[in-house]
Each structure stands twice: as structure tokens, then as C-alpha cells.
Length: 367
Image (cartoon, rainbow, N blue to C red; front, side, top):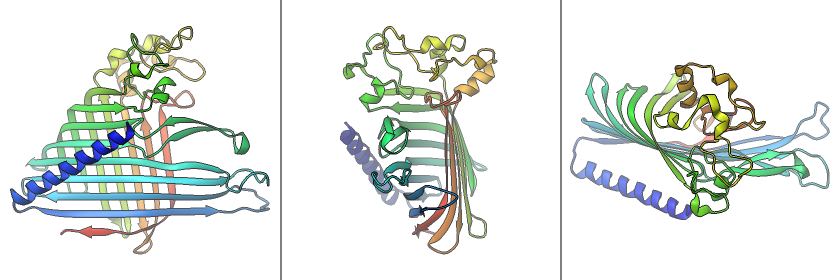
């Protein structure tokens, strides 16, 4: 199934880009391409041996790619962005000679984020746009417990498990360095193409049919859920905010019109699977690891509940160039998604933060 999805996605992208390229070059005159491709390799290393203040030896390697391919025409702009990352960290958590050096390997970054948007300028920077965005990851994600020989791992995510495809017709206000998109007609499809995850209850919001679902029978599983809602995106990208300092900031908000129909805040425990019938599907999984309910929300007003239901994706990147091929960077990504239940009472928050030194190469074409 994964190979089929990958092949189909690749073919669709190639055909779409090829046909659009042919159309823009043969039927429309006066346009120009501006492309930027930035692959980078980030490496960090720490070594401790008989060190009084202690520490764990570690090697971290992360490969990233950021590409921006823009076609500018007097009547429209076609903008394509590829943001990819994959990295691992090797740690020596136990000095025991019986265990291999750097015995613990954990993923430090994993990201596939592809965006294609075409926009038409109408009046004083305002216009209309159509945007398609795909987010997923390259490999399996694990939840770890213990260290060294006592470490256990459990798969909690995988390629296209989940994946999010967002398509939006929106009003857009665009300036040189920033843009705002507002859409009240947005489709967001969530995919989970991993039967083991679905059977374990990690559906990431893909609602199962309570009349048919049986965790022992994959033929009863649903692998996709389509949501219709509102979407807001704010984006800021500026080279040389200060000399040699680049800044990228992004905020995305999505509210599912259908989601409230599946939720009852005064009886959230009703959405937990019946322990006496574990093969039956919960309508929604909002349970906590200790069995608590979201009691603090039951007395909240309508607006507070709607904010709680809104998916949020916030990102900030700062790069400072020391030379033409070396830079220091900082990145953080905060996500809020009620379809994901992590550890703790507010386990819907997902937090990623990175700082380091990178070696990069840059190719730029266009005006």
C-alpha cells in the first residue's frame, strides 16, 4: 500500500508540474521562474569520558532540504515549497562494557511538508488563491521507555500514518515578505495507512465505524477522514532582517465544522472504548492515560470549547550566516491537535525545538 501511495503521489506531482510548466511556457508569455534550493547537513557531537560533572556522549546528524520554486506572471503567481528533514541521534546512555558504544539511536527530526499555491492579484495586494499542502513523515516514530538494555519502544506513527492533505480556496493578502490567507471552505483529509496503529487506537482523528470496526479484522478499518472547515495561514519570510540573519515564521489554524457533532464535553468519557468490549471502536479517543476526563472544560463557554477544538501549527526558524557555507540556526515547532493524545493532562501539545550549526549549499536562479 505504501508503495502504491508513494508512486501515485509522485506521478501526480510530476504530471501536474509538467502540464503546468508546458502551459505556462507555451500559452502564456511574460512570466519568469525564480528557484531556490538549499540542501543542508547538520552535525553535532559530544564526548564524555571520566568527566567529573558527567554527561552522555552523543552524535546527531540531520539532513534538511528547503526549496522554493516560484513562477511569476503579471496575472498570477504559482508558488511551490518543499520543506524536508530527517535526522538521528546516537547516544551512549550506559558506560557498561557489555553494551555497544552509542547503543541508543533515536530519531531527532522527520518531516515532509509540500505546498503548492496559485494566486491571483485582485486589488491592492488582495486576491484569491488555491492551495494544496501535504504533511507526513519518512519513517516510523517511536515512544520509548527505559534506557540501554532495559529500553522498550512502541510505534506511534509511520509514513502516511498520519498524513494530512489540506486544500483551500481562500482570500489572500500578500506583500513582499509576508502573507495572510483566509478560507472558509477548506478540506483537510487525514490518512492513517498503518493497520497496527489503528488496531492500537492511534487513529489520529480517523473515525472508525462503531457498527463494523473490529481491531482483529483490518478489513473493517477506515484509513481516511475528510474534514470541512475554516483555515487561516499567516507566513513571514525575510532574508537579511538584520545583516546575515534570515527569519521565517508560520502560523496555521484549522477548525473542523464537523468535529463538534462528534463531541460532548459534559460526557467525554462516553467516547472511551468499552473495557468489557475491547474490540469495539470508540467514536473518538479523548481519554487520558490515567482515565481522567477533561473536567476543566465542562464548565467552559462556547468560545473556549471552539478554541480547544481548533488545530494549531506554529513554526519559527532563525538562521545566521557565518560564511557562505556555514550558519547557526534555531527552530521551534508547536502543534495543538485534539486528535493526538500524548503524555500528561495537556498531551495534545506537541513541541519540537532545535539549535545547532549547519553546513549548507545554495543554488538560486531567476531575477
